[in-house]
Image (tube, rainbow, N blue to C red; front, side, top):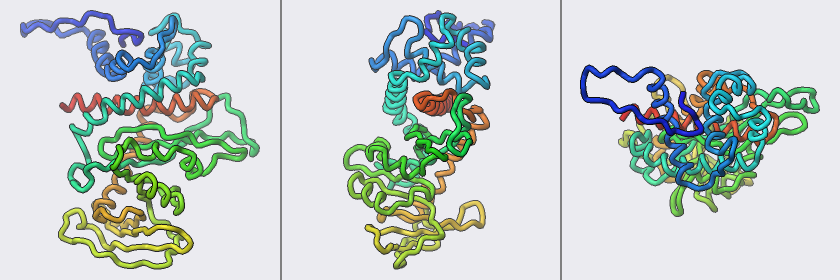
Length: 371
């Protein structure tokens, strides 16, 4: 593994002679590591928002956070002893854990994630866009979002129920590419955690636009926890952000009027019905779309306040929401990120951002190998 605090080693020159021996494993490992972290290094070298520190600079901190998500150390001390200190001998335990709880470091990690998205997401979409088959979605941001819980930190305190509160973070994922970002941490309460809709209402509406520029629309795909009719109406009217979610059986519409749709459109081949829905005492008009699953006998019913896109396109956008569930599964099964690193809210946010950075770097590396 290359020294993460810098990359000043000379690159080996690959000769054209067929009899030249391949580079030794250590060199190959170093080259792979440098290629994997190259997008982060490029941002730190050009963006100008990081700070140079004598012992433990921002680049080394960011790379260590990503590396921790990729390594199999069960505790922070095990990671320090087995991976971090061998890379940065001057690093200390107190310095590392203090950095995890530094609000300045957290702000730096947020900036790093934002710059990485600006520079790399368009390139990733140009290579592989899962929604490119739907020309009507040109210009749309289509993102899935959901909360994901992991276990409490070792030194977390118990709540009023004498239980440990799990850490719940809401992530959002670009349905075109699988790019992941942290949206917010769900705040703990005296007896558990607040409802996710409460956390969402506290976020700046611009964050739910997921990078959509002025004049463009966002389709925000969530589970049924997001059903709040007034909140959805406000997002649609003020920020052109539309909600797409699963229908809840306890919803009682005042009227349900069938809408016509084009059965000759290949996108609508699995659609059974498209209805206009009104709810009493709530503003806005909604759609209830019923469609068959493409690979089973299941029937899916979805709810949205977007009124122009073909029902089959919206049904497919909801089906692609499985990508965020897959990302959560990989977070647990592949990265083994099941437990909070430290007790402070700042450290928990740093961990969530590091998980997203590792996920996105893996996406970029996979696209590079594919190319």
